[in-house]
Length: 343
Image (cartoon, rainbow, N blue to C red):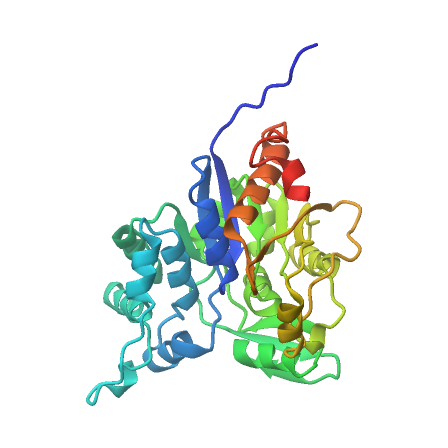
């Protein structure tokens, strides 16, 4: 009997999203020497420091890109300590108060170079990042949503607030329509796989997929599409939604099936469940997946808060990639084994 041989090679992986979910994924994966990572980041943030800088300076919102670069930094902890600290309000510079030093740095680099991509590359070099970080587009736009009652809203913060108030989202679009950056359009077809999520579904995961040209680029990417679903539902407007529903939303947007859904089966403490229930957030159920979509299940809760455990998620991703792309699953007895990821 001839044993199958799995030959390891470097895998070129694109990770799509934003918010806090994408940096957490990148931070867990960057230590794997067999992965070459590229973050494709949403650029339609309208809240907090990023939104203010966009409105006041006319720059692209830097926050999500900054967090991804920090996650890939050589010394992530120290970089986060310095660049996520907020400047105090100064008597003669009140407009600078409350902004993170990293957001200001990236915005200044953009204004100096006149090119956001060049600014991001400069930040990557400064931080010694192990992967690439690209904005999905450098054209300004806002997220818009239509709810089940026919009402509409505009802006990331407002769309999130609508879900929290109980409005169910029926349609999401970008206004104005914007195009994929040529560098990103060229990079996506070269990926061995694309990972989407985790993150706020309608304000971090969906918007980059709405950019003109992303669907076409993904159609040329022969590898699998992997969706990492969230741990919780996102307010009373999406009560009863499931991981299967999220996969179908994504599949409709990109025009091809989601090949793998990595979903949580673990549960936090009763105290944590009760705390999140006050915000109308509940553990996300798997639901019904389409026949073409493979589930990879595991307990990914990190401590008492709704965050994926970086290490567990990274091992589940590697197990999935090795099975799909290297011809044979990683050993079930090893730390990255698919059997372990499904446990």
